[in-house]
Each structure stands twice: as C-alpha cells, then as structure tokens.
Image (cartoon, rainbow, N blue to C red; front, top):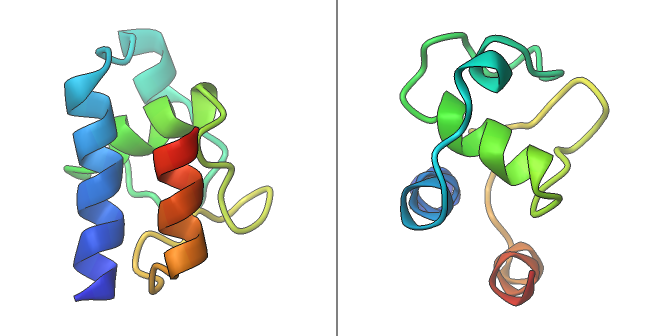
Length: 77
C-alpha cells in the first residue's frame, strides 16, 4: 500500500500542477525509472521542481515504501 501511495503522489503532483516538457521526459538521472513508464512524467516533474530528489543521484526508488516524513515533505513543498 505504501508503494502505491508513493507512486500515486508523484503522479498526482504532476497532474495537478503543470505538464512536463517533452524534452525533459526524454532525459532523467534515475536508472530505476523506466522510460515510458506511467509514472515517469510525475517523477521528472517532481525532480525538476525540487519536490523530490530521489534516494541517490541515480535512483528514485519508485517501489520503496513511503514514510510519514516523506509525505510531510511532499505536502509542505
């Protein structure tokens, strides 16, 4: 359930705010975010806007559990 919440929050942020540019969708630093995945646009948007920076420079960990601290950070950004 936490995994689903994490992914849904990323997608919701992108859907509510702004569309990600086509150029940005082609390039992102995360090896674990598959090109063309349904959440890729949301991950790129959150990364570009500084809402989320991933778990390392090359990993976003889209399947990781979301902690309460992560959710508070997302909501206050």
